[in-house]
Length: 380
Image 1 (cartoon, one colour):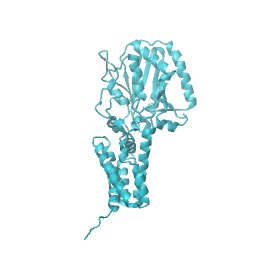
Image 2 (cartoon, rainbow, N blue to C red; image 1 turned 120 degrees about the vertical axis):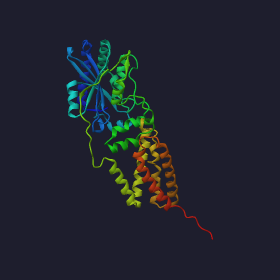
Image 3 (cartoon, rainbow, N blue to C red; image 1 turned 45 degrees about the horizontal axis):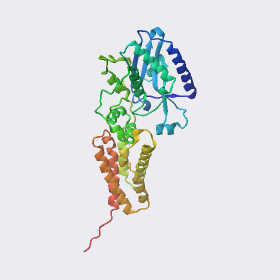
Image 4 (tube, one colour; image 1 turned 90 degrees about the vertical axis):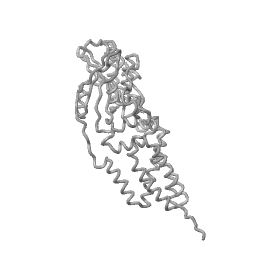
């Protein structure tokens, strides 16, 4: 799922080469020793490489062919790049590399690479080779990226299934886990990325993870997939092996998160309350906006706004003008929202990572509620 960043000149060159390779490949008949493989690249420490990558390799020494087809490219110079990426309108496409260039890149990044050769007849290998080259020169290789539904892994699955003429490759493992639970371990040692994705994703990622959308999930499913009563990918060959490097950061960890929240609670002044609620409210408005604006369905129906509640901005307004009645009412409302939120989170993977925020919010809200509760007169 790692993207390839391309300049306009590079895009033009790749387009020219892909068109040329289409006409060239039409005159190539793969030999009986040709192999086609699914390549799975290991995870890295950069944000773009946290989920690994999927590609297809075509190798035929008799025809001097050793190419890797990669559906994870986009042009960084696309006009309005950031708004398009946020909205979910950014166009991705396929490129082809020589195997040498491809493997050198992953050697440089110290990332493992595995290969699963597909056990299919020569005729289907030829058809896949032609389908790949045709897609490079047509609109078939261009697609609008979707985190779960359309990415480098799903595109590889689609073109192989298309070649085989049936939906052979499907999700075979971890189908009882939710997408959120499947994704969660990928953010180990990247705490704030884990927290960020936990709170910006909505209900879609809480569905059962039945779609193939991650490289390692495809690798596991291929290992147990049958085609015409035979294993489709009978063995996994390790082309590059690197032990996963565990990076440590003095700030990007659970401890800094807890320390910051603890300091806010200890400081416990009006300015801290105001800043905290203002930030939480602004994030809530952002989540709501993205849920309606973005075509990324993973961001829709985000129940995390019960914690990052936009009404906290209204609370800040009344806090600023010292309106005790509305401060009390909004504090009670947000405490009730937090209670609903905790109930919703009971069986969710991100319960414990957001729980410190829930506790901090509840602590501040209870203080506001008690300080602004209208005294009940005692009649003697």
